[in-house]
Length: 125
Length: 290
Image (cartoon, rainbow over the protein chains, first blue to last red):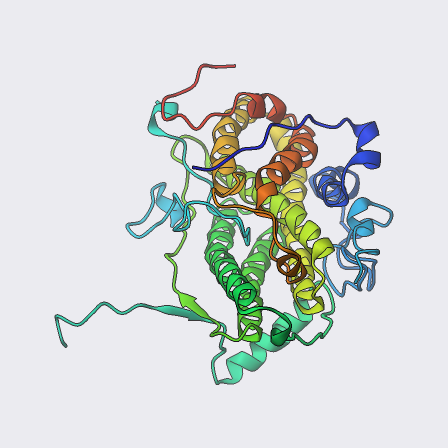
């Protein structure tokens, strides 16, 4: 048996940047900033944040050497500075594990995603 | 061949091959890493045996989940290929698969520092399949939303929190290395949705289908990574120092990340994630329409 916390209330945009804990501001930035920085859909080259910068403040105040970097001034960039320190046939193959709970059924460690689960049959019918 | 031989238990080890392939792996990993690692010693004698045992157990679990998820991104890359996603999108998906393998290697380094073998029983191979009730394009979107926009965003948030709370410099550095990659894995989801914005805008039925799918996976994911373990307790000071997380806030960090990051992030693309969250259910029977 596992336990769920009482559901917290969503925080509105204005309030969010002031009262959310740092890790949530970081996550929120990851989810909300892409619209301002990606021009792929319009066929525009992405150069503002994709590997063209040799340095940035990074998630935790260290240098980022390659890849997409956080937007300067965003919470993703801000988080760390004071931290103190088979598929092609439409069906699973015989050995596929698509309902991929780990042996204890939960994952408190995180570590990486599992495959997106299929909807139950009744949902599809 | 002995027919009655005991089944072989395969092991996953962080040990590299004794060949030039290992040299190439080291060079590739160093070239692609997202932040420069800081070197800190680990002083195993600074902790009680019980704390070291708990840390070994936790990092072995972490090694397993990191290793498992590599095949998820490998399969996702194949699906990206099937829909001829832009080359940068396909390449980044493969890079994320490589990073999950490297994370397993990092976990192995921690296990060795903790004085135990960097090896775990090999878990089953997780495979990503095509969803039979939707197009391949929507299958890819489902996998990206589930894996990156939701799962990896929660993982990135928690790693940020753990990095902030961990006092041992060696362990904190490991969290920092992991977080540097997971940050992109989370953001990749929203970047990918951005590449599909016009496609989604022209397909109301797909957005509605994704919202319906969200009702199920919000509930499924909450059970998997958003429920406090039954034996959870706040960590002791020593456990907190070595980076053992406070599992009594598992549910809170999940829900707060969903409400404040994932849901508003998805709603930017016309997907009614807030309504889906409010009506989430993992019931086997089909829920009534909203």
